[in-house]
Amino acid sequence: MKVMMILALLLVQSVHEDTSTVYIYRNKKLIWGSAIEPPVYVDGVEVARMDNGRYFAVRLKRGTHTIQSSNYQQTTVKLDLELGETYFVRIDLVSDVGWGPGRGRPTLVQPQVARTEVHKLRYLGADKIRDAQAERILIQ
Image 1: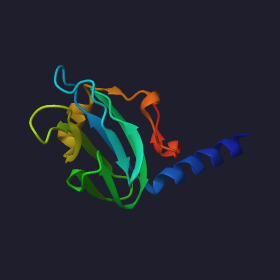
Image 2: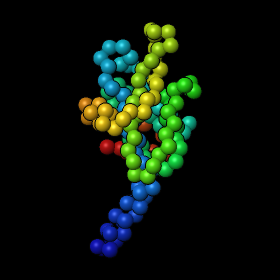
Image 3: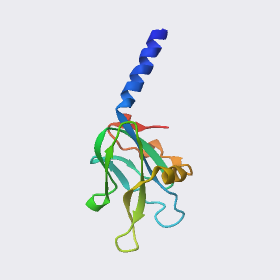
Image 4: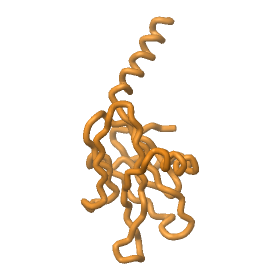
């Protein structure tokens, strides 16, 4: 029994040793855009709808990945992930015309700034997760 538990722990550890964690979040806004839920794409696959004042995390393998929040190319963050590192991407709402519905714009944020911002947020609800490969989304 003890050997089985140790093997299970080693397996879980080895699964996560070849990945990095990317936190994707959206700061809470009280008025403009609070009801808008822009999509979040990782490597072209929609993984979630970003709710106001929420965050989620995704595990990704080492290498180059993209985070996008609309189908506009200028709204893409390209990440070159290193093993075991943690990255933070904030989704901000922007409008091309200054009014009306906004779209999401991802921005890579420095860890010391992002940790302060994420600390104030709540985890994204499971009903907002859209990823077909949900095992890479860290459910809290």
